[in-house]
Amino acid sequence: MKVLLTGANGYIGRRLKNILKNQKGIELRVFVRNKKSLSKDTVENFEVIEGDTFDKDALKKALEGVDTAYYLIHSLNKENYKELDKLSAQNFIDTASECGVKRVVYLGGLGVKNSDTSKHLLSRIETGEILSSSNSVQAVWIRAGVIIGSGSASFEIIRNLVEKLPVMITPKWVNTYAQPIAVDDVISYLLSSLYIEYEKNLVVDIGSQKMMYRDMMLQTAEALELKRYIFSVPFMSINLSSYWLNLFTPVPFSVAKALIEGLKSEVTIQNENAKIYFSSIVPMSYKDAVKKAVQEIEQNQVISRWSDADDACWDKIHSKEINDAIFVDRKEVDISSYDKDKVFLAIKSIGGKNGWFDYDFLWELRGIIDKALGGVGLNRGRRDNCDLRLGECLDFWRVEDIKEGERLLLFAQMKLPGHAWLEFKIDGDKLIQSAYFYPKGIFGRVYWYFFIPMHYFIFNNMIKSILKNSLKI
Image 1 (cartoon, rainbow, N blue to C red):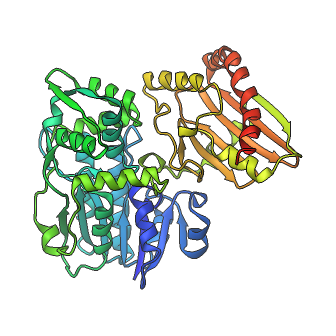
Image 2: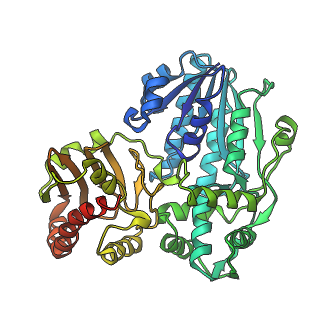
Image 3: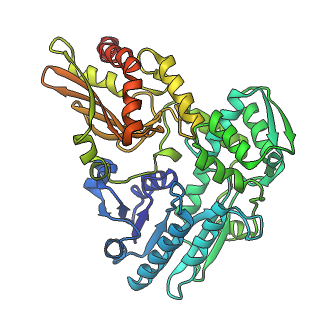
């Protein structure tokens, strides 16, 4: 069976890819925007097609000869995501039909269309309807609500609120019902969708027990062995709730608002098809899903995170700007007497719970300012305390390039009047640390000069601290 996987760097796609790679009788093809975002093992052992669903030629190349295609794509981080999602789905199903694809498996969201349906949920439903519109391609539409797993947006929001707030004053949406499901169970349903013997379109609603969001937070507290108190009030608006989530959780304001708008509607199972066609799968309980997610975080076994889904062509988007950067702060030190491998390990350990080696309070202050402006702040942390991979998030940076033992390039995702990078490079016996800034307008230049005193303390100390930390490895 030839299988195409889209969204392979997304939260679900990365986990599903790891399972599909080891399935006997499956010839896996991966469709991504940037081949560099994939592991060396994937590139060397599986067919990889570069492109996106708006490039019909690349899409046709990706779908040619495919039996089953996974559609795990959405454009939530873009302002016009609703229109983009519809166009993407239409292009995909039209090309799939043209190429003779037999089945498309789509992961959407639970919920029904009505006047209260959020823009985000409505987009997910419309995507499913478009993918189910072909007369020649069968659609298996898996619908899940709150997905609980290490690195999922829903779980990170709940976990951060529970850990940081002993007493929570919450809006009335905490009394809305949902049916959460463990990420491992979602993967099981998606994998089993390859093999079900059914020829017509099929909508499969999945989830564990029905419960209110209040119950999810309280059960999360129990799993974390914490005592928490929740008081709901009727006067908290969507915007106020979104700012609250933005402040205390890793999600930026735009994502928080989209999620909050969806919480006013129940997301519960509307059919029994999961029990009928996937009877061998018994979803784990909510509390067990939380415990497993926490265990993965504590043991540095997080496979994917919601914030690491972007596989855009970093090398093409920003390459000219970094080369033309107007402001550069560069530091160099001699490392001839140091173990270069350990120096690079120290570089890779930067950020997250490990901190930024010194002056962490200045980084935290910058993170608070970024959150206040609706940015991502420092709350995203890092997936693994020691390892980094291309494209993933590191506090309010993204790993834009990494060459083991040679270079780490971070692109700033904080709110800035321009674009900024932080580069660490080992060149012979030198460690070169460079901060680049490409300003936008006069305010961008004012911003750089305003922060020069802070940069002096941070960057001078950082390169020295990297060497000190390398001696501890």
